[in-house]
Length: 323
Image 1 (tube, rainbow, N blue to C red):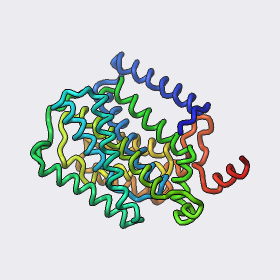
Image 2: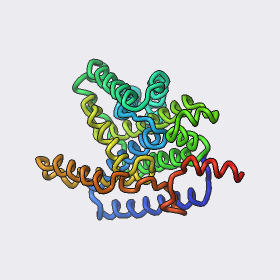
Image 3: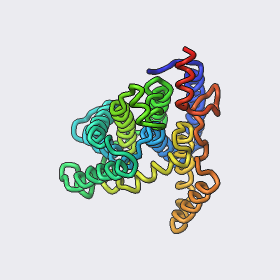
Image 4: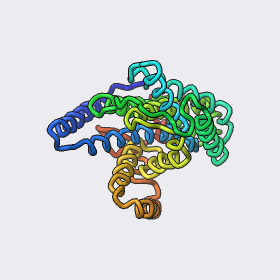
């Protein structure tokens, strides 16, 4: 599935250089603790946006229950580290796989739905998870869990998992499996007629997106000490969806850019809480009027050919004919 081409290695080298520069700025004190917290929050949102883009933008499934997967990862990893002393990395991986399992369980019965109906079903899934957590004393009920070890750091954990998310999902999109997902997005009936197992690829997209959303939830829990069901409500799912749409639905690079822009915007407007939502809404409205396809449209993530469009069904047919 993973293709180690020149673009891949160039992207790895670029990421390591960026990591090194930020590491030096943090070590020398140029960037303070607030800046480090903002960086970690940006990375968490990048993971959430890129994983949701795989479901909504690439496969064409309208899901708005991503906060539900995030909450599963947050609670599972927090319980593992608090009650069972599991090392953070293992707790995050287990949390991610549990979230992926829920992605399969919710994906199979709901993937016969499309459009608004699927959106309502995934929204219901997210609310069911929230209500269950709200009424479960073992996980603290409405008060949630507190005293979670603050082990999420930019220098090690955060950078590694963010890079892993982008590499895995971007290579999946560029593989034959990703092209099958794109075919489903463009025309599901035609894709099925061409022999593509549409149910299988929808479940793969849901489970892979849920996997990284769960890991992002675990990283968030181990950064902010406290989690409660209110942190993973409909508004959180909506916030992640806005990042994807703002960057460009179907564009991995756009999802990264959308997550960075909105996170920095929210951080910059923290000192004006009474105007924050108004300014935020006005910016989004202007964005949709003058740039309805998002900041980057359908631009793909390629370091060697930055600006290359995401693969279209015609591209798949052309490449198949030439091979």
